[in-house]
Length: 279
Image 1 (spheres, helix red, strand yellow):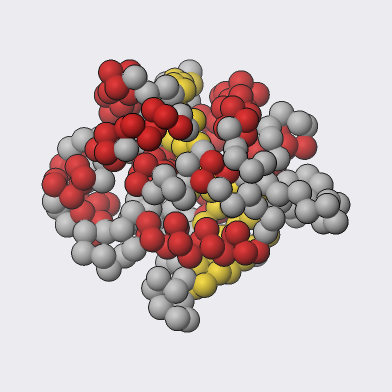
Image 2: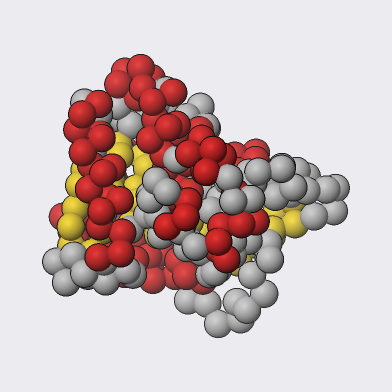
């Protein structure tokens, strides 16, 4: 389902929008939620532009899954604890992990990097540079954030943040009911789309440009702990700078992971903001 239809009672600062998806067809559409930064409308005259933080929901979920995070970050912006950004939470299929699937029939990655980014850049005052397009996601969305950012660094190049991302290396450990439509039970295709495989392909670029990378997990999220330990160890071995976080007492939920960091987690976004080109 590309359009989230159950959005009748949204917070006052959250807007629901539709956008065209020409990748799927001339009349196809998708939806997203958006929160504009404080002062966006007041500064219409001088044309200030902003980075965009794309927040990716988890599997078997929807864009409303992002509401807590959108409100959390909106409040941090109001308090001056987070740089001003445009927050966008797109809706995609509940199974798909934000990537193009094995036979190209479900081109989630292409829709994100082409259709959605073009729509956001045309509709809002964005800084139209890869360093100003950031990604954060929870669970399957965390997987998607790293996949999109490492596969399309010339589109999303500023910051990649995963909240308990699904980074297992064996497809059999993921469960066929949630992965078949994407990988067709192919370990080869699964490995080719893993964050570490994509990272190694662009390692010189990552070392040169030093995008902000962050991998967080709840202390009680035992199911994905081993996969994160492997991710952290590999990044250390490759000499790639990143932010690591184990949030004490947090389960597999975005709000507990982000909320557990509170203001300490905002430095990650300030560091990303300092690297934006064309600010």
